[in-house]
Image (cartoon, rainbow, N blue to C red; front, side):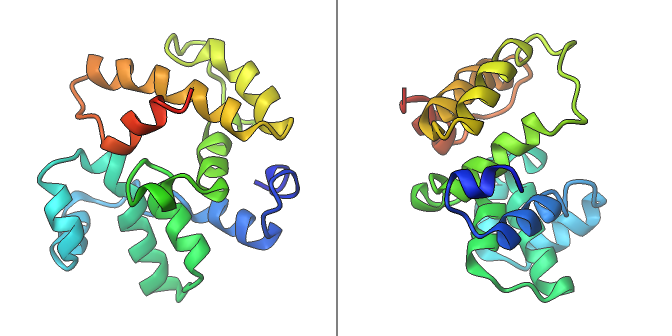
Length: 167
């Protein structure tokens, strides 16, 4: 996120903080997830439709960091909500949310060499994202995620389908 922030005119501190916290809820136990979802009407509705781990970890994570860490910056919270394809299209399609998606994949510690659905787009995505070509980088991911999600039986969030049409 630190590398991507100046390329896309993002506030560096917000970008780094969003990057550090974006998966805050991903490993919470399911009973904690359910308690947080039950306390939030919009999440309750979508929890009936979409997979928790892939789509709702962002919104639940935003609730956790807001409640437990007191972080209230809208840009950070919205990017965390939207990085997993959840939220309004406007929030979803902002550079900070796209950069979180890129950082998830491009983080130097990740090895995708054994991941057949992703390994061949990592290099072009890195070049496009770090080269300031946000939409070029953004167009690579949905085309791979949709078939992979379908192959493992996950529902496809409308934002993911909409993002696939960016090309």
